Image (cartoon, rainbow, N blue to C red; front, top):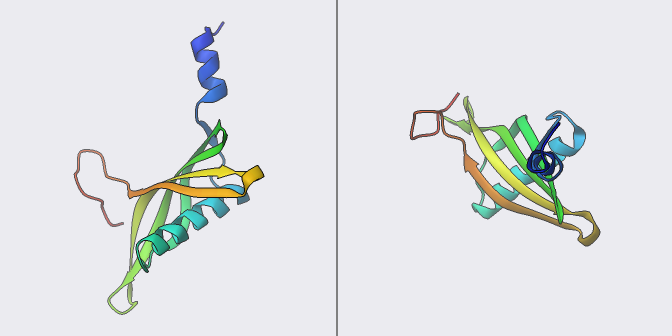
Amino acid sequence: MMNSVAQQKNIHGPVPVDPNSPKIQEVAAWALNEHNKEQNGANLVYERVLKAEQELVDGVMYYIDLEASVNVSDGNMKIRNKYYAKVFEQDWTDTLKLEEFKPLLQKNEGVAVAN
C-alpha cells in the first residue's frame, strides 16, 4: 500500500508520456522555434523528442528532452545536440509559454557535446 506522499507524487508530479505522440512533437517543435525567435534568428533545426514528461499544474507543464541540429560549413555538415525545454500550456486561456530552453550536458562534463 502506498503512503499518501507517494500517492500525491503520482497524482501531482511529472509523469512520463510517449515522446512520439503528436501533441509532444508539436510542443517540442514549437519550443525550438520559439527559442530560435528569442535568440534573434538562431538556426536550430528540430530533429526528434528523446524523452517527455508532463505535469498537471494550473494547465500542463511539459518537460521535454529533444535533439536539434545546426548546419555548419555552408550546409555541408550537420551538428546535433540535445536540449531541454520546459513549456507551460493553458488551453482555456490560449497560453503557450517557453519557460526554459537549454543544452543538455553530458554526465561528468561541463559542456554540451555535439553528436
